[in-house]
Image (cartoon, rainbow, N blue to C red; front, side, top):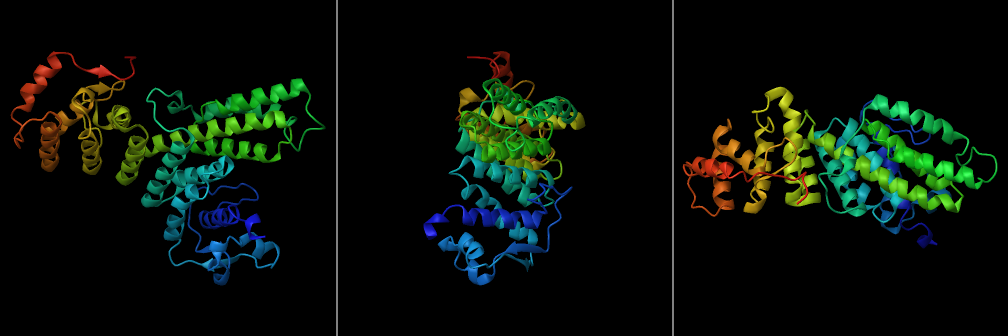
Length: 380
């Protein structure tokens, strides 16, 4: 009997615990305006939790009648924090579970006041992307997002036309033309660029509902593909917003690490370009890539992994790794970072270590005179 509950009961319990702390109402799909941790969590009594490894949650609730109880928490943020990594770990074998975990991580990225919680949520989004579609393409159109008002204007008519065709609302089986229309509407909604994470979450939840209620087998495969696509788009959107998180350099570092884990050195010029675009309005075109020295140091460490031939790669108007390191080596306000960047230049170019970096300006002038810069947006 226990095997009937294996795999879903523990995961469902995890979702209930997360929802109870962040203030999400699973019955009405009501999101909190901002996450204010509940001092209580909905959990099983301790004697049931001690047997959690037996996967008996459903058995205890449905057969024994031992319902969950509100339990006082000493550290609500920490309680949630310990569950963030588990969201993906418990869901990675099923697309619907990944969808549920993904939109909760997006909620945390969007509204959690804890820098650490948002950072861990970004790691979870990157993990979902690795499961769905490993790799990273800096020219991926999914990295281009819309405006909230435009999404609402275009999504409204789609949803209105969809209502009479929706499972549970329609009258009788779908005819061929109705099935084709619903398939087109779902696809149009999926590929409509969202303007914020609230819209991404709503789209994922809509497709999850369709996945669970649709009885037309001709549509089930299409719904799965649209959920797959919507989840990819939403996870990338969350990571991009993490790069522009002005509240926390730790969150930006987490986003940098997440994108780098997806694309390695191929992602680095794109990361530099995104960060530069975020700061240009504040510091101008000649200012630093990021205002925080810890962020710049992390970028420098990633630059240390490039091969000499990769140092000139650029994305759009962003600096190449070489250009970033050169600015760091001679213009950065942090003396330690200047020395660090010079050491990295020596490492990449196999030059004897020189803390003053006296050889670098001449090398840089000769290098740029050769016109070696390569834009990664152009085809090889």
